[in-house]
Length: 292
Image (cartoon, rainbow, N blue to C red):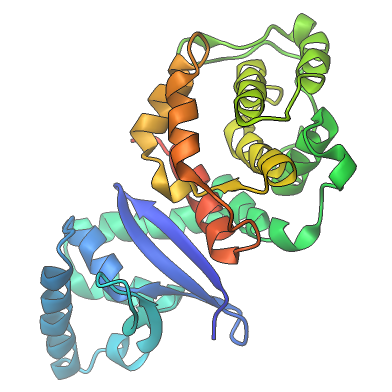
C-alpha cells in the first residue's frame, strides 16, 4: 500500500493523492478532482456526480473507468474507506472526458504544477524526512537553514542555499538590507530557543531577515519545525492553520507576534515522527505560497 500522502490545492479545493511505491506513481482522488473542477465541497454531491459520470463513460466505452482503481482514503466520517483514484494519465483523460472549460482549466493547472519549480522542489521536500539532513548540533543555526534551502531548491535555483547579496522587497515589504544581512543573521542565530515564545521570536526575526532570494517561507517553516522538535518534542500540524490567517499573522508579526504565536500554539502536536503530519506540513507550506 502507498505510504506517502500529498494534498494539492486548486482554487482552495483539496486534491488528495497517495504514493504507490511499487508502481512509482501518485494516485489522485477522483471525488476530489470532480469537486475541484465543479468547485463543489459537498461530499455527497461529488459522489453522486462521479456515479453519474462513471455510468456515462462506461456506456461510451471510455478508458477512464478501466484505469480507475481503489485505494483507502479518509472519508468524511473519519474512517478510511476505499475510494476511486486515478494516476496522472487517468486524471488527464478524466478532465478531457468532462469536456467543459472548468475541466480544461483544472487540467492546465494540474499539468503545469507537475513541472514548475514549486512542483519539483516539493517532491524534494517530501524526502527530507528520510534524509537526516540537519544534524542535532546544527538545529536552529543559519547553516541548518541553508542546508534545508539547498536540499529543496538544489538544481532549480542557482542560488540554492546561498545567502542573498541583494536587497529585496515583496508585496511592499522591505526585508533586511543586504549590507546588514550577515550581521543580522549572526544575531538571530544567537537568539535563545529554550521556550515556545523564544522559538517563535527567532522564527519571526528570520522571516524578517529573508536570507534567500526566493523560497524563504518554505525552508524557514521546516527550520522552525526542526527547532520545535529538538527543544520541545513538538512540531506544527500546519493543516490546522488557515492560509489567510497565517499570512496575516506573519504580516503583523514584524510589530506584534501575538497572533502567530496563538496560531502556532494551537497547532502543536507531539507526533514528530508521523509521516502524515510531515507530508501535510509540506503540502500546506507550499499552499501558503500560492497566489490566490
